[in-house]
Amino acid sequence: MMQNIENKVAYITGGTKGIGLGIARALMENGVKVAISGRNIQAAEVAKQTLGSENVLVLQADVRNFEDEVRAVEQVIKTFGKLDVVIANAGIGKFAPVDELTLEDWNAMIDTNLTGVFHTLKATVDQLKQNKGYYISMASLAGTNFFAQAAGYNASKFGVVGFTQAAMLDLRSYGIKCTTIMPGSVSSEFNGHIPNEEDAWKIQPADLGQIVVDLLKMNPNVLPSKIEVRPTKVK
Ligand SMILES: NC(=O)c1ccc[n+]([C@@H]2O[C@H](COP(=O)([O-])OP(=O)(O)OC[C@H]3O[C@@H](n4cnc5c(N)ncnc54)[C@H](OP(=O)(O)O)[C@@H]3O)[C@@H](O)[C@H]2O)c1
Image (cartoon, rainbow, N blue to C red):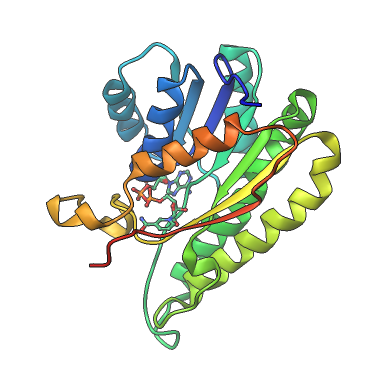
């Protein structure tokens, strides 16, 4: 039984670029009202223009600060009246051999990628309970496969997978669904990358948007709680 998602309200952290922006676009094409956040308000305004709709709210919020997440949720409720879908997507990557990884880069990844997804859940969980909502975290294949020069990133993403699966067990009795998506290489602005035609083999942000739409439309009795996503063509 497919669910109608029209007029649902979604909050996407890190929705101003890359994967989050692709998810925002896909949700809006399906009639969902969307709030997107990032640290840089100019980038958020550019994203709003790109999306070109009244049904989008842009927010300056840093997932590392719990108060920012609380304020962002207040803005979403003030604007759209409720919150049904939360995509904890904001994340960064800093790559170096572990003996060269700086404390600053370690803390930035753990605070953003791991503590951030908890902040976002904690700030939204009352709304999710009220609306039998959906919480999706953006982990990575780096949340199950470890690789060289990724000790901090691996630690944060393994953490996101464990966090989301445990949260799923705690929250499903409230009718809340939790899923963690674990993509391989995606064409985005991650780690300073500029998307280009050589990215054609990669997963595209729109593909992940389609997966999110499919999850939201799925029969309420079914919950794919952990999804690994790979490009079909290898570089
Ligand atoms: N690209 C890949 O190959 C890939 C693969 C698997 C998983 N992922 C994961 O997918 C997620 C999205 O990454 P992406 O590839 O779309 O990267 P991206 O193009 O760099 O986008 C990252 C988004 O997160 C925001 N952001 C970063 N730090 C933030 C913070 N502290 N608070 C709020 N927003 C913040 C950025 O906006 P501001 O800079 O303005 O804050 C931007 O909107 C990340 O969690 C990443 O680890 C990426």
